Every structure is written in structure tokens, then in C-alpha cells.
Picture: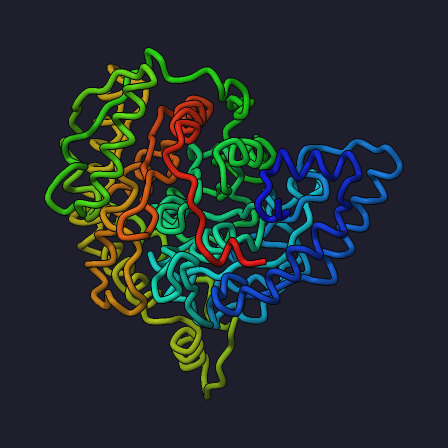
Length: 486
């Protein structure tokens, strides 16, 4: 078996038994990146020297009989909006093209303390604003299943890297589906944890009340293992929750017998592609065969979720990106006066999608419009959260499609509103601050389909348990041809 086919548990065993060194494993992935990534373009930067240094350090710890953990010596990759000290953190934007943070994000720090070897930084939609990774200022990323198609976004580089065997796992961020939707398009597992479960310190902010860091992996067990490493309270993040439950990998094999799973009727409508619906319905039948109980439920305010999200997210985006003015951070364009410098710097530094969202957010926060738009959207957000609470009074887990379609072709969608509709099943989860996981449910026309499981706040362990049962039922075992390349 190729090293890139191994699970994290298998890689950990190989390293701890000294059958494979961390240096050998790192070289394996660096070689694959050099050979395969030109077809995928998942990486913005590859940190070869630093990765080799960390791998050698892990081998010294192992040789000395030190405290090796489950991730010691195993390579990882980070979405390029997660700060890593000394490594360029660009957010796939010209605005931050030359930004080298003087500190690391808490999630990155935790991985490094766990002995992880960071291979590089991954491509994304600029400032995490997009659903296809076509909005990167540098280049689009290609889906490993079909390089003429998008990998999803905004964590498209992360999903594509894991799917193509260019990293054993990756860390992304999810504001309205940016982990789960690319996981669906690329046939991998992606978890958006409960808001506050993973520190956002060192994550370049898009929409602060919605952003959350989470893992993308090949398997459910791998995903739980990585979340255990990065989750936990952080006093540097005021939204981090103390005493949140841990032990995400425990109880994976307890099965779903007696579990009550709700199927929201609003998520199975005419906008759902037939091949996607079939794969999701097949997943429902598999869970029923394993002993789960299913029933139709209703989330009546879901029709308003997309509009509420794009008011709240753009308002917070406008506020967060105000700091990129050519003085405090980022690109500074030459101009004859201060106002001209602000205008020129933001015009040259931001791409069209970022400008579109900044302008919309500035408008909805402006005098005379705040109550009509932003405040009303926050009230809808409360109604959506209450919808979920009512369903969870009866059901343990909610099941839905992750995205209404499989991956579409690069350049196929030019209308922003059409692209925004691709997040219709994931956005409500962020508005409510709930955990959601996407895992592969099958293929349609040779492309992966994802199924989404949603849980109560801090019930990630239950989601992993249900997802693991579905995964182990044999629902999906395929891999893209690029992943099979020697």
C-alpha cells in the first residue's frame, strides 16, 4: 500500500514502530506535490525546508523514546488564511501577497506541539469569499476527480490536496460551508465544529460570528483525531468556549441503533440534482438498515437563511477588511495623497468578489439601512436557531445533502447569485453555530456527492459516530485517478 493511501492511525503506527521515518514520509509527500500538484494547484506555497526540519525533529524525539503522540511526524497542510509564523499567509489575495505573520494561529500551534509537519499553505477563494476557489488572486484549483471542474470553496485547496493524496489531512475554515462543500465536491470528510470549539486566534477574519476552523481528511476516524488535536479553550479568543466536551474519537464504533435522524423537507426540493438526491436517499436507507430511525422534520425559516447570511457576513466582512487600507496592513499603492492611497491600495489589492461583498456590507451598515437590513437579518438568524432547537427536541441528528449539485466546470458559473445558492444547505448551520460534517455518499456521473449530518451544539462526537457507521457500511470507497498515481 502507498503511504498516501494510509489513514492517520496507520501512518502513526508506522512511524512509532520505526518502519517508516517522519523524514521518509515527508519526502514521499513532497515528491507527490512536485509531481502531481501542477495538475491540481492546491498549494500556494510549499515549505520544503521547514517541513524537512520538523520531520527530522520528530525523528529525534522518536529515537530518544520521547512522548510521541498520534500526529507526531505526520505531514499536514494549512489553508492560507491560517497564520503560521514565518510563512507567507496571503489569503489568496494581492492585498496580503507579502504578509509574513509574526505568530502562529492557535490551531497551527497545537498541531506543531502535537508533532505535525506542515507541508505548506493551500489555495482558497480570496479572503475565503467564494464557493469554487476560482476567486483566488493567483490561480484556480482543479478538482482531482476531473481537473476541468472546481474543487469547491473556499477551502478548495485543502479538499483537493487531501483527495489527491498531496497531504494526509488539511486544516480549513468554514464561514458558510467552506469546509463541507469542497469536501462534498472532492469526496473527502470535512467537519465544521461548533462555534467556539476551536480557537479562531490567528485565523484571518472574514465574518467573525460565523468563521470556524476545522479538519478535512480522508476518513471519519482521521477527522475526529485531528479535531481532538486542535479543539479546546483559548483565552486569546473571546468566543472560545471553556470546558467544551472533548474525546471526539471515543465511541466511534457504538453504531446508530436507536438514533433518531431528522430529514428536513425544506432540504429535499426541486433545486436538488437527481443524482445527488439519490445518493443522499441511499445513505438514509443505509442508516435505517443499521438501526437508525428516520422521519421528516421542518425548518420553516430556511428560505430566509441565504439572504440573512449574505447581509450578516458582508457586514462583518466590511468591518473586518477596513484595516486593509495601505497603512496598517497589506499592499500600499503609490498615490499623491492619503485618500488617493487608500483608494488605490484597496482597488489594486482586492479582487472583484471581495469588493462586491465589502460594498454590500458597507451599504447594509450605513445610516438609515442598519435596521432595515442588518438588524432584521440578525432576527432571522434567531428564528433559524430556534427552528433547529425545536427539531433537536425530537431528533438526535439532522441529515441533508451537503450541496445541491456535484462539482461544476471551471468557468461554468459566472453569476454570483447562482454560486451563492450552492451553499443553501450549509449556511444555516453557521448561522446557528452548530456542528456539521460532510462525508462522501456516492457518485453521480463519476463525481462525488456529500451527505451532511448536523448536531446539537458540542455534539461532534455523536456526529462522528453516525458518520463512521455510514462510512463503514461501504457507502463510498472510490478515489480519484490522481490519488492512485504512483
